[in-house]
Length: 149
Image (cartoon, one colour):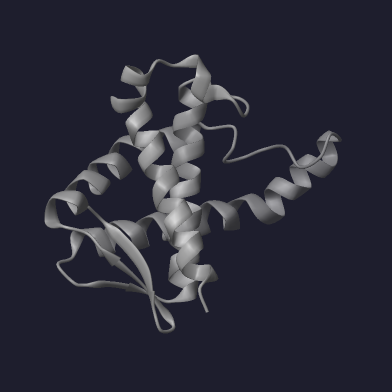
């Protein structure tokens, strides 16, 4: 089972080769959903003029940053290197797993807290809910590792 822990100033992810491959498959399957997700590009302004200006000034940079975050996760998972993340890298992983999780939740029709009760225990153990739980677990473990001083 993967382990995420603080190692001095770095966050270490201990993942097996199989776990890396599984995370890469999840990334490959969910990344297309990210671009379709309303979470990726929420409206900033009700006013159309202000919204267009926001899109012109900000949206491109946000999309580029998200693509860089996802590429960083992919590159490290594809390598055979030990995964040691700086705080900035760990934050990029957090952002990536968050956007993947939100896109999957949106696809599943999950809109609010308490969604867990909508599904049977068996459904929680099968994809796609198991994938959603895994993404949430990775996020939680990264946050806990970052909080350790």
